Image (tube, rainbow, N blue to C red; front, side):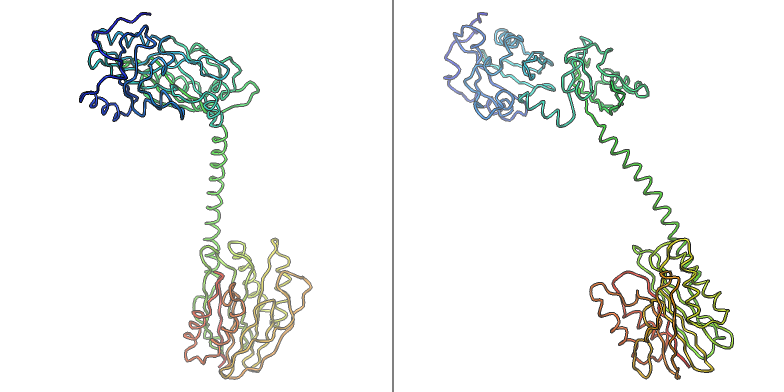
Amino acid sequence: MQRRTPPTGGQDARSLPEGDHIRLLRSVVDTAFEPALLVRAADGAADLDTGLVVLASNIAAADLLAPGPDGRRLPGRALAELIPWAGASGLLEALEEVVQTGTPLRIHEHAYEEASEPGGRVRPRSISVGALRIEPGLLLVTLRPNRGTTGTDPAWEEEVYRLAGTGPWEWDVRGDAIHWYAQALAVLGSTVTPGPLPVDRPPYQVHHEDAAEHEAFLRSLIAEARPTHVEVRVLQANGAMRHIRFGGDPIADEDGRVMRVYGSVQDVTVRRRTQTALEIAQVQLAARRTRADSERQLAGLLQQVIMPTGPVPESVPGIEVAARYRPASAAAGVGGDWYGVTPLAEGKVLLYIGDVAGHGFPAATAMARLYHALQGLAVTGAGSAGLLHWLNSLTCELSEFTLASACCAVYDPERRRLALANAGHPSPVFVRGGEAEAVAKPAGGMLGLDPAARYEEVDIEIEPGDLLLLYTDGLIERRRAPQEGTPLLMRLAAATPESLEEYADCILGNARSDTDDDACLLVVRFL
């Protein structure tokens, strides 16, 4: 097509003198965010392909028209060279008309076709174009690529879609057809050939429970003309089901009527299954936490019921007792430590302490059973070894495996004799005249370990002022320095107490472990 000579003489655009107004226009182009060009109509051009030449451009225009690393300089190049599809789509002719008539050009959606799909398939694209004649033969051209109209490499674009599990589709509202691309059909699991299909014949089948929501999504794109999305279940030919997220971005004309919708589909099946599994796990975890909280509260109540809270009854002659308990940390849970002082017949008294392995409700339950069992066995009048023998038999018969340690001592004030038996428990500390030593541990294993275990006693002759310290391992255990716990306790115990209560406080406050376990301390002074 021959181009009519514009109403201006002059030189080629590449050699025109640049005045102040041209420099100002260059600044306007440079500061624009959208792709912008100053285009000069060259004199004497034989046709449109060489008649429009770029005088100036901005970075956005170079990114759009020459995205590669080479050839990014646009000034001096023909517009037909930079936009190969401009001639076939009628864009060059439209710009020529602006040159001739001076009538501004504003095309919201200029459609064209580009052979950019892998395998040479033609892909419809569109771009918004604006053109204004600044002076005879000089145009300001702005371009805004619509969705899917970028200068990316098609093979790279397809790989990105594949990795992201997404695919594009375009809805020509006026033509009442949706163009489905290969990537979108792969996401949907459809075997339909890529291309346009009527809106009412989609290449997929939505689950009947999601059909109404899917239809509402399509209607809202046209009625509300704003981006929206929906997630539905799409049935597969093999009976399986995919969770597909549909998204759409409507493009409207100047009157607000939607002309085209650019959309995408994304397979979110794995994400949805993971989310469902997480929700199930959260429900299960919440149930376990609720159960754990209930068990922790019940275990705490059991412990409060069992642990002595007041002083030793005055009916126990010949001894003075101070007891302390340090609970376990919140992270460790309720422990299984227990202790007590029980008056016996003939003026005797039973001193005992124990520790059930573990924490929480099972430990508290076992602690309650052993505590009450020992109190019941004490009425038989058996010695400390006999009591541990029966307590071990009971522990071995429990329905749940239970392992515990215990130490019992029967004191006869009339004979001033202390008979002590030990079932795998830390050796008590005996203090006389400011000297502390561990009581020799008589034979006997832990409770619940061996039904045939035998227990022996060690007899100690008691003098006025003697002290006996019964304690659980939570008082002295140290992970970082295990050898320091017992010697420190010995030094603390050797101090001569003026007040038994202050003496117990001093020991509990200074003989600290680093295991976060609970600890019991029973201090007995013989009168």
